[in-house]
Amino acid sequence: MPVENDAVLREILGFQAVAVVGCSRSPGKAAHDVPKYLDEHGYEVIPVNPYAGEILGRRAYDSLADVDEEIDVVCVFRPSDEVSGVVEQAIDRDDVRVIWTQLGIRDPEATRRAESAGLTVVEDRCLKVDHRRLYG
Picture (cartoon, rainbow, N blue to C red):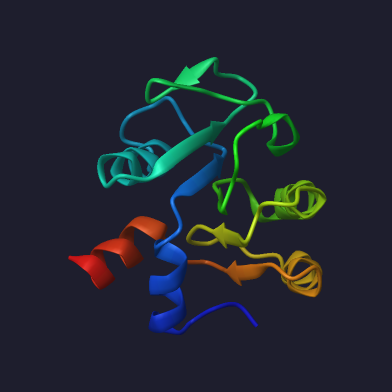
């Protein structure tokens, strides 16, 4: 079951390295503004976008498989039908602890696979909104 408990959400928000799949270069889009907020609050944001060389002053990777940095949380800003592929890439890594899909993004089968692989899943929630709510 995806996480709904505030105590567990606080624990997840304590992780520092957040890969943002679908990170955008365009201010005003949630896929840009949420990672920017995280960056401003001390998180190590790792942009994943095959169409960008750099986002928020950081190297953008083509896929999770290409990231050579440690990842704690994978934040997903891709359509629900693309979550399965992101989950597979996350499972293939040894460092990912959490899959977090943003508002409106759900894939129950991918969630089951991620949880079966030992990953924690937060689904259909905004990381920025929960951070603000829990940490003001």
